[in-house]
Image 1 (cartoon, rainbow, N blue to C red):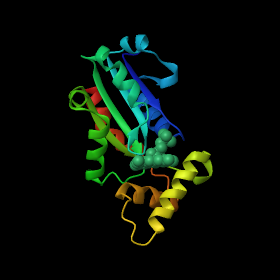
Image 2: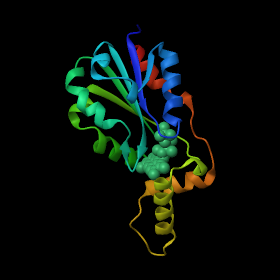
Image 3: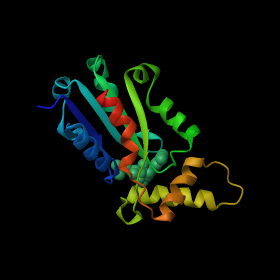
Length: 177
Ligand SMILES: Cc1cc2nc3c(=O)[nH]c(=O)nc-3n(C[C@H](O)[C@H](O)[C@H](O)COP(=O)(O)O)c2cc1C
């Protein structure tokens, strides 16, 4: 068995692509959250957690929070995958504070990567949400949307796959130190 595990939650595949690459580069075992339990996690010395961003929340964060008390002392990193440009430092500060409390941040190094979204693949509830966001943005004078909403819609309209595994260099170096 390897000493490192990469565990991910991915709705449309972007996070899975990063997780597979990271696992390959680290010679780690790869699991989706559905495939692993706390007992198995404990067997590893190093853990990497990945999750897509949905309304500012990292997919799988609930499980990380739940298992963390048992994982102290292990080397851990986490990465989110979203469509808000990684240059939007203010947005990702919010993501950090919304998902990781100070205790978690002391134990887990967090990274953010850019993802992908194909409108045709979206489930009905997500299409509905995107439609609502779009209508909100189109409403003249509407100021109840955030720069993240704008980033999401702009990225959807660009039809650009922003997954780029080269962004993981820092995480890989950190985990290999
Ligand atoms: C309903 C919905 C909400 C989303 N919310 C966010 C968000 O809050 N911030 C963000 O940066 N990206 C957001 N995204 C974009 C996803 O994070 C992006 O498509 C990511 O690549 C998904 O990763 P996954 O396919 O591994 O689940 C959202 C996408 C959908 C469909």
